[in-house]
Image (cartoon, rainbow, N blue to C red):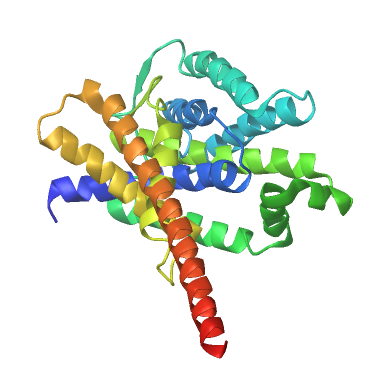
Length: 302
């Protein structure tokens, strides 16, 4: 397989794990969790520092998920318990995580892993990444069919109804944010081991990437019968990462990536909104035709 294509597939599968986490907050909970950028770097920095200390690379990923969950829970506590707005609480955590990540990496902006054993050492990278992505898909497929998963969807659709049932929605929100950031941190940890280093800025744009991937996946592939939300996240991420890779391939500078990402998000949102407008137009047209037919039948009977 061409190394360019292989690289796109591998990176898409890695980032799709983070997108699955972002899907929980953005699509289901309707929560603007900007701390995703910090949690992604947090996962990479924790995994990297543990590996340099001699820990098993797989265990380092488990710890990354744990600290990512803690970061997400803190965002939830700020929002639920302290009544701070969702976007502000996530920004506060994101800003705080920058200093935390620097402290974890010993004050260095970049922590290399080139001489360390990682989950990819003497193993097929594509197979390892595919296994992690598959496990994530299976987990979320199972989770959304559980009672807690249905309650989470219910909170996103109609929180007042869930509250009327006597259920503590605040605790569920905190858990959802913890779960979301756990998988975002896992994705960061895997990427850090994949590229051989952890960088303080590697999480920048994670939330934008997640939003674009979700919108693309659910706009283009929503009518595929065999797919679920996690599969759509993977498809959307694959298209997003392919767009970024092709942009670099044709001559754009790495410094242009933020602009390219913004353009992709605008296009994705336009497609999504355009589909909604088209549906409204189709329904309106159908109603108009139905009314015309009724009038025609009425005039004939008269």
